[in-house]
Length: 537
Image (cartoon, rainbow, N blue to C red; front, side, top):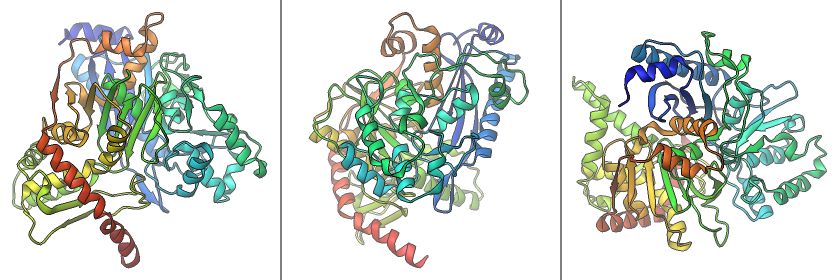
């Protein structure tokens, strides 16, 4: 732990670095010092809304959330160090990837922000897969754009800018319409050789929609692609006022290329080098494997994206992870409160998660589906959380919790099995981060069983993407000439970093494999739940 006086002086001298990430349920701000250690933080909770069948966040929620998270950080700085932030060495903005934000010539949002959670672009995704011979998931920005075209939506002809949430925030902060390559790779396929949008596919798309006679070409409306470390502009006077409502933050601060949560997760777990991987498990869950070579063919279950420095990555992304699990924990909390008990949520989560380790390896005849929303890997446009069991199941709390933990990762496992068992991708290490890993040893052991790979959780894993984007900002202003992002992270950030590693238990692996087979075979049960509840409820 560094001396408080040294940290205070760095903040006063404007040498600290700020990272802010818009997650699905929380906007988090992290301040780091010259050693890259987090020294203060702030946050703001928020939730998406389902409006007219679209998962969205309003612009008002975006800006009030950003400002509140920053003000919360300022309070933490004031409480710990007795100073205020007036200047910074650098800033980075990150957000959940994908989605659809389009603006007109007056910079006005044309339709409500369509987030990654929407599964409304199935026709477009399928046609683009055939056109590009490249997997285009439903949540990708290009799928949303093409679906809007197929739907004949009138706004499309007037689009002047298409971006992600991170790109939008960065634009408002700096005036620059740019995007980090990792986030850009969730908008449109990237050519790792050029570190830019794949030009052949750009031309194919422009030809595909040529008969529409739009006044734009695809490159006209998408952000310029930047790799980690490149200049992405500075905080403008207007941007400073939007971020810090107190008006004390100075303009002119360098801002790094905006990135998506997948990229910041890779950075926060030191997983940008080839043969490394990480899994982020929270509201959604995704695994990133940095590849040594391209896969033998495209798979609808696997996204091809990049690291923030443009290395090719296979991504297994699932829309649903812990939301249903959290809802059940909330039910247990309500029961305890009804019984007059005082509830500590960290203790409740910890006890319930640890109880799961006592359960049968295959969950003893219990089955859970955690589909709050649709799930592309298993071809669901909608989801309904569902729990079922056989009449003679070993129905107890341990198996109940274990089934929901398995369910949180089961769809991810379907994609991972393709990657590891069919494509024979090998990883030297798999890093875990996110809420699922907060209870020591539980989510980690379940994940190790799912991947049949040792899983490491670092002490800093809880810092997440806000820390990751702060590290990218630090890399931009502190890197040596020719120093790669992987070398910078290994030598300057993670040298001597402590972590715990759990190898997969063979019996857990076998049990999870059996559960996954049951899970796939009983998917018609989940489909029936969607269809019948739509019809009658």
